[in-house]
Length: 360
Length: 126
Image (cartoon, rainbow over all chains, first blue to last red; front, side, top):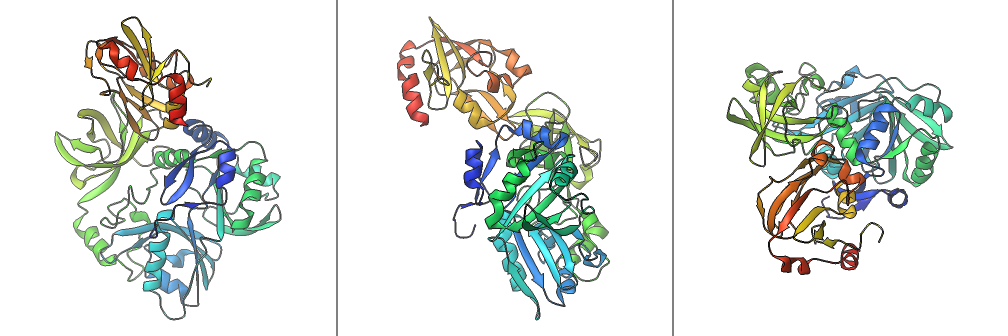
């Protein structure tokens, strides 16, 4: 946070009462776990988990020129979206480096809903303000918006008991009344499981949290499980795996970059990289020998030479082995390439794997 | 106090020491395992290695992070608990018994007096 203030979501007291362990994250005091990271992780893979994601940021962009304007700042092609549809996309600087990764939803042809990372709310909003065109209105709704993520194969069953008998299509967003409260609900998430993310006026946070938990087959989950779940799916975490010095192509996010949609911020650099190749690449690796699990900033070696650095690493609760993401020199970034990760002076064997680790 | 046994000595870095003559058994406290979250990996010292009081001799890793484990007193490592290497979750489930980490032949018994009692440790962690 630019003002150094530690923030709490409206559910802070509720989390404490539920036995949560609170940690600082991106300027917020957030629950890292309730019952335990592995138990929560397993609940999401097996049935369902509920996450407080109120720390994330929500912006509304309005105006008849919203679409071409946003399309000139984001890497994915907004022309692909119909009303009510969303897409994962990336906000880049002039050099093609990643400022933030986000979700954008087209509510209608003159209104778009953006969901951005907690750590980047101010920076993203400032960036958009600075590049604003005439006729565009920008509203930061982050402070007055609460958000929950219900994730897991049991999502539909739970939502059905709450009156939503059909989930929106993947990446789509609908308006719905949940327990008497008007919400926006999207079929999205950060876990690789089926699930929804729900956005609503912050004052209703406790009521919605309790309503969703009252359905039974769902437990509260913290940021610890959120991190292991996303890492098994190789979803990048901004600040760890994304950087303003590295492009989406280097981050392996080329699928979300539309180089042929016309001009957009950072495109020149990405066109150049597409032609000449990228110098480094974000790869996924799995531990293949005995040793400690990988962690961010551990050095990576291939054929005896240092080739890069781990950006995220953990012990995968599903695979029961160390997994991680690392930026390494592009000429060694091949699936099946043997690596060594340096852990406290020891080398631990690893192998480059196809993303994601779990096929969903 | 039920999570802080009376018969043990405690360090400021949340290890416990059980003294039995010249031998000390070492593990981490209930509070420490709770703060660490699920332990998923343990690196124990070698038998015969010498340890200095407050020196790092082992590493316990949770899903989230790696933490050094210090020797509460100086001495020689005499035994390590390979059960926790195979099943690190023992440290969470049973930190004072099945989750012990190593034993140490205490070389300077006067160091024991510098450690905290159960009551002092209880105040220390608040």
